[in-house]
Length: 196
Image (cartoon, rainbow, N blue to C red):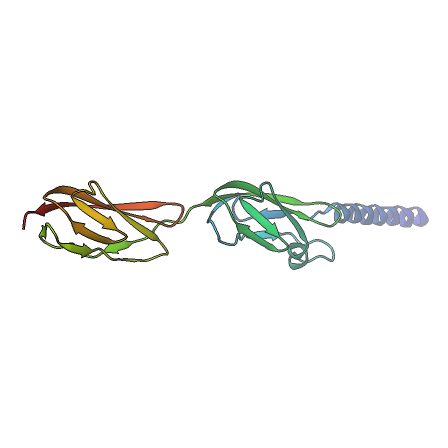
């Protein structure tokens, strides 16, 4: 009877160990991202903000350092080694896959957007503009922009770069267009050229 009890207890211990080992062996790495969809400005590096569950001998740091990262469109989000860069306007899916045995993956949709133009401040125009007058408009900007100036009637007010000359009497509109290559802002002035 004692032998039977010992054998029974031993078999229970073995079964318990087998169940424990089986559950441990089935534990897999899981990858997750802080957000499933992010937006970044073109030219910026992309941080997917990934995390991973530790398993067996692999720490989270080990797992994150050994991911295979791919982009669905390298013209929008480019992957080079460990660097992920937003290179074109649009959306792409970036997938990170753990290189080890269980192939855990996570995908993040990356929306690449254009930067805003920022604030552009222009100099003040003369109070009165007379035929024959020359003046310039200058600007300062909070970001890198190109500003072009146009007039609604070059026969009344000519423009060369940011320099203007009043030619004949009349009403005209000056338009300044500031662009960063992706977006633009406009400012307009109504000018009356007076007979001197």
